[in-house]
Length: 268
Length: 294
Image (cartoon, rainbow over all chains, first blue to last red; front, side, top):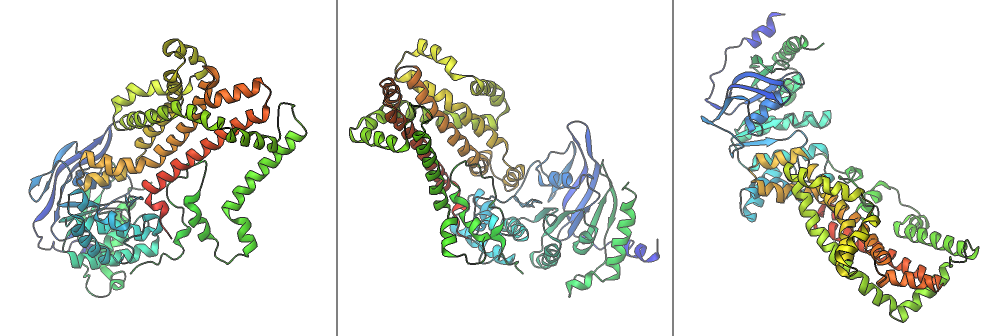
């Protein structure tokens, strides 16, 4: 290893805000003795984007779904704002890998669906939904149906739906893996703008090293099954200014390189 | 910021095409694939309606030709059949026959639809309901119905009850099994989406599972109704001749073959139109995205 990646990785941890989500000793065994997660303990600080990164089958999506309350942990606790959770809650919103849009509903109804389920009056939820539809750049597409949109636009709908319930924590499960490369790059840039604007906590699952380093304040590296935390990395990259500059930033390149060296040992 | 959706309408319309019949829901898609202006004559011959009328004409011509050969002295030409049809319409015997046949058919289909969809959905939502009910309907679907008719006649006589029961036995299994499969195949991520946005179990069922299942439930209803028509005619041929079954039996016995075939043709046309109506109801009421203009 060169000295530069080490310098980047060993950078003093920034003063963290208090954690919004705390994972305490979570293990998960699926029926049939598939051991997915082994004693995971990790904090997710408020206002930051933390990525869960690891080879496929390392349980990163399982961990995210346990945090979301969609899957029960076999043992251990998840605390949100200091309280243990046993199911989904209003302070967390989920963005799905396959978008999970209702094909029979318009963009407007899909985005407003979280509010609809909460019993918000239709005029109010349309106002909120319209705001976030504009925010993700889909203004004018309110009355379209999902099959009339491209993959990238569909995920923007999924993102607007998660934003409109005003949760503190956004859980994103490989949100850009089902869209094409150019759209994904644009999406990553837009995500940085969104993070700057929304001041939310993001937990982001990805299998792309470049993507994790590009968007994350912290990267939690998981080892393959059973998933354990192998490393927590905080790339010290300023995200002010030109978004393309990040991809040429020496710390960006060195961090990508260092993570790749770390993960290579898990591949056969 | 936004990717333009210019050529996206050529994407598949999402969801399966389950209908064996009309495809009016996808005309927009097909039209969107043709990007250069076509010659008006070619456009006329490529129009779906033209092609369908053409298909019917080919069938009728083949029928006329086969009748003129003749392939059997008992096989009338298309023209003779139409004359027979007209005379049965003119003396109201066809209308009266439909009035009788439609009674067990309508009662049977309403019962099969309401109970069948309810049982199928319950089976899809609940494992115990599935284990309890699925053997009955799988056996009912596989059983040769004609063999059961003597039993039904012993138990329920030869009246409306027995005929309604035959319609139900024919129509219900396919409705139940389709509704069951439809509910079971709701995309998991849609259900997770509902849960993560705090939907109650009831909201998940009413706002996610049932709308997601409706295309396959309706496919089952169309197949079930087609089977119900078969059941109604079978009951009239095998139990006691009434309605359309009576017209068929009677005109065969007096060798009035054009009228016999006219009666058969009329029930086929009625069945096709009825199933078409179900599909239109489905698209107008349950699948707004299929109506969406592009």
